[in-house]
Structure formats: structure tokens, C-alpha cells
Image 1 (cartoon, one colour):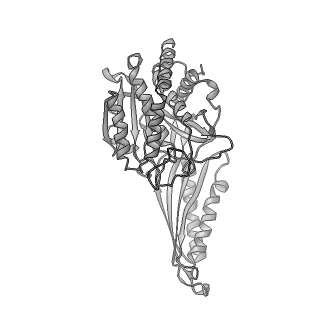
Image 2 (cartoon, one colour; image 1 turned 90 degrees about the horizontal axis):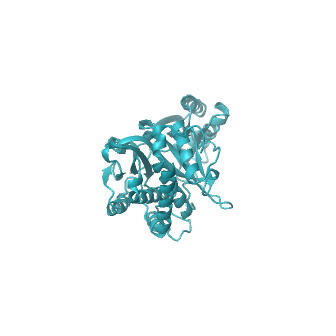
Image 3 (cartoon, rainbow, N blue to C red; image 1 turned 120 degrees about the vertical axis):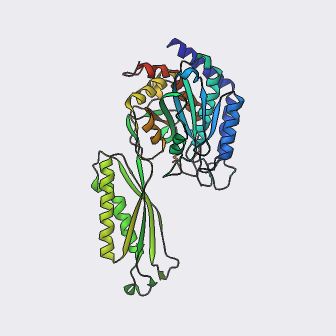
Length: 409
């Protein structure tokens, strides 16, 4: 225990010593975002830093994915930490001095912070690797935003977890609902299952002055939106979490023309497989009922995306212990409500024990949301998340030996 505390102090000193360099890494990544499956320059930038530091790495996994190993020689037990790389098709309005220089593309989900924190942790761990009692694998994953395929499955298929004795895998994600500097770890279900749906409503077009001679698909589509979005509250136990949202509604070309077709696109998020099955069945039934009553033809198509991801309780408690010991128990939130977002890190959790850590980015008086053009994350989050990754790495023998899993130290 004393040894890990001394190592953490040494790593903290290295973080302070080269802080401007590490912050600039984050600024560069934020200013040069790339969309899913287009992370070519991002991968090259990350790889350049890793190779200059003497960290062996493999590239081209699942597209532009990277794995880098520190101290994995002799097949030592190894912890893997994953960060996502891709950005979103948004025009940035954050006001940051290092805002996106790529028109119409922005890191609006914190992936720049995830990447830079993991890279910084790797650069520091490489400098103290003689003090490590386990191996560390850095996983930089592309295309997390690209559901339903994503980047996790292609990376795993290309060997992201092979070639080392990986015992557990961890990740982190920015969370504006948590105060900046704080952390939350959920035991059990942490990432909602995501199912996308697409609806086509076909009626009979015509002149807006003669609706009696037409079958207006917009009316039927409007009923679908209202019924679908109200379903979770009416059909699912209040102690469970489920969300149905319609994000796209299109139809018509002119104010005085009743169109022939209307289209809807949306998403359903659930944790319980029974809730998922029930909601899908009810949406099918509602579609059939509205089709009959409106005399339209309604086609509902489902596209399953990422599965539910559950933090293993053992791994979640380990995360809490590591952060409490090295960053302070006061930074840990005791409870955090279910987060309905989905993430293909769930596929890594199917392969190894592990957990995802929520890292706070919230600032009082400045409400923000993920996937918003206004999202603005402080460099302080980079520092805290880097320290959390370092704590996970140096305390990993505790995970292997099973020590300190019952209570926070």
C-alpha cells in the first residue's frame, strides 16, 4: 500500500511538471475533431505521442483503433482502459479558445477529454513502469457514436483484448449532471440498451382544401409520436427506467399539399429485457391500431443498436476504492440515478469484468448537455480523470488479490 501511495505522489508530480504539455494535447484533439470511422489524423496524433514515448502500440484495429501496452511483458496480469475517439456532426458554439477548426464537426460528448486523459496517463505510467506490479493496456476506440455497428465489436474482433493477460477493462465518460471534479460509479446496469426505430406512414396525397378526399399521413404520424413517447410512463413500473424519444419527423413539401408519406425516426432506451420486449410489442400494437383508425399504411422497423452494459459489482467497488484512496472519498457521489445513454463499451463488459466511471463536468449556473454545440468542459476535468486512470492502474493488484473490496479505505 505504501508503495502505491509513493508511486501516486511521483505520478502527480509528473502531471504537474508537464501540465501545459498535457493540456495542449487535449486542446489539439478538441480543435481537430473527426467523425466516426474518419479518425485518421486523430489516430496518427495519438500514435505519434505513444511511439515517441517508447510505448509499443498496434494500429488499425477496427478501423483507426489503437492499443498500447505498458509493462505487459512476461504475461503479467493486465488492466485495460478504453477511451473513445470520434466526434459529432455539430457546429461548435462553446466559446472555447481551442474550439473546433473543422466546420460542422465537434467534440460534443467529451471524447477529447477521454482520449487526452488516457494518453496522459499512459505517458506518465511509462515513466514509472518499473514501479508497476501489473500491465496496463490503453485502448483508443473509434466510432463509438456510430451505432448500431460502433467501433468496439470490430476492435475486439481485431484483437483489442488479445496478446496480454487482461483481467479487467475500465472506461470513463463525461457527465454534466455531476459537479466538476466529482465521480460516480454505479453497481450493476450502467448503460442502457438502445433500439432505433423507423416508421413510414403512407396515406393518400392531395389538395389541402379537400382533406376529405385525402388520407393525411401527418395526422397519423402525430398520433404515433404522442402515444410512443407516453408509453414508458403508462406501461413500465415507475421503479424501472425506460425512455422513448422521437428525434426526426418529416413529411410534406408545401403548405397546401397533403403529402402521401410521413416518416419518423426515434430511439428506445431500456435496462430490463422484459421492459424492452413489452414496449416493442405495444408500439407494434399501437401502430396497427392507428393504421386501422386513420386508414393509413404504417410500417414500423426496428434496428437494435448497443446492448445494456452492466458494471460488475466487484469491479465497480474496486473503482470506488482506488479513487477514494488516491483522489479522496469526498469526490465520490454515493448515489447517481440511471443514465439512459448507451455506449458500445457494453461489448467490452461482455468480454471481461469491468466498469465505466462517470466523471463530472457540471458547472453551477451553466447548464450543459452532452451532444450540445454549447458543451464546454474545463481542463480541470482532464486532470482529475487522468489521476483516476492512474489510480486504477497502480492499484490493480488489489483487484487481482481481492483485497479492499468490501469497504472503502
